[in-house]
Amino acid sequence: MPHPAAAHLRFIPREIDDKEIARHVKFDPDSGQILVLDQRMLLIHGFTLAALRRELMERLGGESTRELFTRLGYQQGAEDARRLHAAEGGQMERTLAYGPRLREMEGFVRNQAVDRVQFNQETGDFWSDYYWESSWEAEIHRAQFGISGAPACWMMVGYATGFTTALMGRPILWREVECVAMGHARCRVVGQPLEECEDAESHLSFLQVEHFISTPRRRSAKPVSSAAQKEAPQQLPDLIGASHSFNEVAYLIKRVAPTDATVLLTGESGVGKERFSKALHALGPRAENPFISINCAAIPQELVEAELFGVEKGAFTGATASRPGRFERASGGTLFLDEISSLPLHAQGKLLRVIQEGELERVGDTQVRRIDVRIIAATNRDLRSEVEAGRFREDLFFRLNVFPVKIPPLRERREDIPLLVDTFVKRYSARFGKTIAGLTQSAGEKLWAYHWPGNIRELENIIERAVILAENNGSIDVEHLFSGGEQVPETAPLSSSSIHSPAGIAPPQAGIEASFSVRQAIERILDGNMSLEEIESLTIAEALRRTDGNLSAAARLLKLRRGQLQYRVDKRAGEV
Image: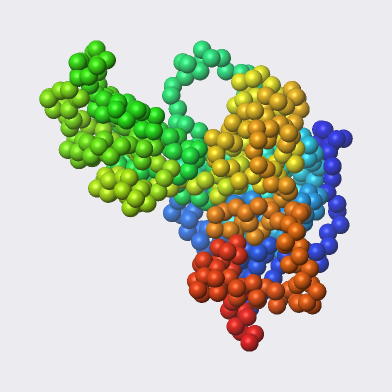
C-alpha cells in the first residue's frame, strides 16, 4: 500500500547497526540498574504482565484496559523518541530506523517493513506499513481469550503513535489492520497523519484518560458557520493531553468534581486554570446553574467589596442603582476567584466570613442575604509564602486549601505539545480560512526546546501568529513562530540530561558556543591530562562541598535528579 504522495517523501535506511544502538543500553548489575537512553528499565516476567493484563480485563473491561495499555505505550514512545533523537544528533532518518529496533530489543515484537518508512520533514507527511511478527501482546491475548474480534497489540500501537507523533510534531496515528489475536497469520499496522485517517476518532479514545478530556480532531470537511456555533449547546472546554502529569490532574478533577468541596487551582500563568475550573463546574452537581468568574487582580481595591458582595443604591458616589455582586449572581452555582492572592487584606477578611457563614451584606445595606455557591480559587503564587510574608490571611488560606490541584507548566508536559499544536493549527486555520500543510522539523524542534514562560496561552498565541504568517497550503517554519522577540535556544534537540532536570527543562548544551572563561577552564583540564572520570569525581565533590553534603541541592547544581547523583556517589564509593 504505497503512499499516494510517495514521490516527495524521504525514506529511512534499511541497514541498522546494532552496535550503534547498543551504545544506548547499559547493564549495571552491581547497582541493580538497567538503563536504556538513560531511562531506568525493568526486566520483568512476561507471564506476570500477562496476568495483570487479564485481571484488568476482568475488572475494568476490555475497552478500558485497551485504552490504559495504549496510553502507557504512547508515553513510552514519546519519551524514547525525544531521547533517541537527541542522542543521534537530531538525525531523523537514524531515529526512525533505530526506534523499531529498540522495541525489538525490549522483546515486544519483531518489525518487518512492508515498505520503507516515507516522510517529509518540511510538510509533516508520513507513511509507514509494517508487519509485526512474534507480537507478545497478540500471542498472549489469543492464548488467554481465544480468537478476538478486534486487534490486541495495544501497547505497541500506542508506542508507535507516541514515537512518531513526538518526532513529526503532529499526530501520527497507527492502526492495526491485521492481528494474530484475530486469527491472521501475522499482525500488520499502518501509520499516517491523523488528517488522512477516515476513522481516526475511533482509534483516539486512549488519549481520553477521562470522558471530559478532548482528543485531537480531524479537520472538518465543511466550516461551521457562526450562526451554527451560537446555536450549539455549551460544551466542556478543550482539555488536551496524554502526559503523565496532565493525566494526574485529570484524575483529581474527576474525583473532586461531583462534590461541593472548595478547590484551589495552583500553577503558573497560562497553564489553563480557568479551563479546568469550567470543567469542574460542568462535571459537578451545579452544572445547570451559573458559573461566574472574576479576576481579582483586575478589580480596583476600592471596588473589590462592591464587585464581590454587591452594592445598594447611594452607598457611595456613583452608586446610582442597587446591583448584586458576583456571589449573588453565582448563587446555586460556582464562583471562580482567579488570582485570589491579589485581593487586599481587608477584602480577604470579609471573603472569609462569607465563605464560612454562607451569607453576605451588600455594601451600604444591612440586610443579610443567604448565598449558596461553590468556590474555586486560582493563583499563580505560592500562597504559603504569601502567608509567611503577611500578604495573605492564614485562616483564609486554610479555608481555600481544602482540595489543592497543581496544574503543571507546559515545559513539564512537553509530550503534549504536538497534540496542542495540532488543535491550535486546526482552530486558527479554520478561523482565517487557510490550509496549513504542517510544521517543518526545525519548527517542531524549536517548539520542544523553548522554555514556555507563558505556557499554553503563549503556545496558542504563537500558533495563531504562525498560521497568519504562513503561506496558504504551506508549512509553518521557525520564522513564523518566534517573531515576537522570544528567546529561543540556539539548538533545538533537547538533551537527555535536560529532561531529568528538577525544573523539567534545561537549555540544550550541544552546539552552544562556550564562553571564553569556560574554554579556558576546559583547556587547563585537558592540559592536566585528567580523565573524564576524574573530572566527574572532582565536580561531584565540589558540588557536595558547596551544599554541605546535601545530595538534593548538589543534584540541582549538577542538573541531575537526586537518584542519578546518588548512583554516581555510590559507584565511586564502591571503587575506593
